[in-house]
Length: 600
Image (cartoon, rainbow, N blue to C red; front, side, top):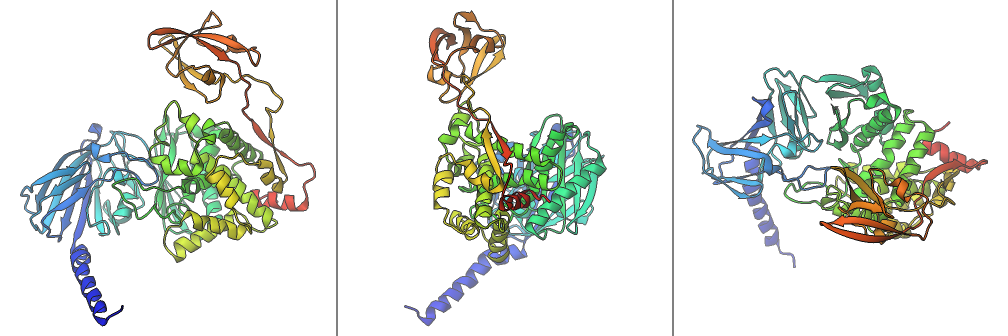
């Protein structure tokens, strides 16, 4: 029952909460200093100064993962030399109380300065790296935060190595390598490239874009900028006004490399430095640009509910990475094609290749795409010899499901609506208006809103199930047939992947339901002989020409013991898809095809 004194109690508790939690943060000042006096040692040095807190103790925490890369990476393992002092330089007692938490007994000191070093020598988009040529910082692997002050605004001062003159980052600059941030989330989500890299610029959507190019490569700057602009403008055309007033691409041109990671108003991309010289490499890079840029909307703003605000201490689970990453994968090649940087035929071949990849993956019949999303933390980044047998990629299968959903919507609306409309609706509703994450049910309802029908069967069969879709039931809406080029071709399914190690042929993978799987061949077996003939580096001559149903004796060494196996020769049931256009598409099929691929 309501009573007036209940409201008085509520006001009193709110008043106390304000003074205990909000007011100290408002009165505090937070300042980070990042230096790299000896870059060849691979150590960054960090100072965190918190003033005005006046607490008995402060806990400093290092995140365990990088948002956008769903694996606990234990960044605290790279921290060394933690120390703490007050404003006068007097040492403060501290102790480590968990794997990623250092407690400083500050004794209500007006200012606390924490110092530590971070070893940074892993060149990836989700970690930090420092050597004599440059420094790269991914925030969660570098910056601790004082617990309770994640919402505290602050300042970052970067002190580049003496010969380095350039810093590229999405953080707001106030000059002299000094940057401000409104809270820890923004600091952590704003990578920095530090050195003497080339900086290129273009404008799109009325917004300046900076391209920080670390490392040499066979790119031609004018062409690169023009084509990146085309991709960016296609993204803006699809989703509408840019949600940022500035954007930074950090590009690492490496001997070997690939991949990207999205951030709030920037991204880091890695590519082989010679990729720009081939059509496949160049369009692949542009698709990577499209993928990470599209994340400006899908993931960084329109997001599943568990993906923000982040808990940096542990896994943040969602069954919707097939939407966040998979549907972004659907759009990356499509936007590259729409930008005129990939031929329509090449794009259709890429789509057919993705479907082929999913359907030839034994794990596609074992793991659902929702399970793949949820278990990313323990499986996706921890591949082993059985991964292909037990898992399916939420990137690839999510992209394929995006294709099917797009066709379903276009078919049911006679080409008037598409998945594009769903993405705009989701962004406007859940980010712009409600400013919160969405649930699977809400995403499903949005799809149904535009598809004009319930999609219970779709989600049951393909999202939470492993049923194989009738692909032509979907793609005929655009006047396309998906043809299996392996149809009628009788090949054997050997199924073992091998590698030559010190002159020995070692089994590395065995595909589920293949001949070798059914015959009991194991990973790590050494192949000695097939049908009595010694195995050399190439085993194909020893197995080609076998008839389906044959039994082939195979000699192996397993754990030092000689074994004889009987391998049954089974038929290869793998697919190899290619699209064919219908000779006489209807006007509606042509309309859908044109709208999807921006033809005509």
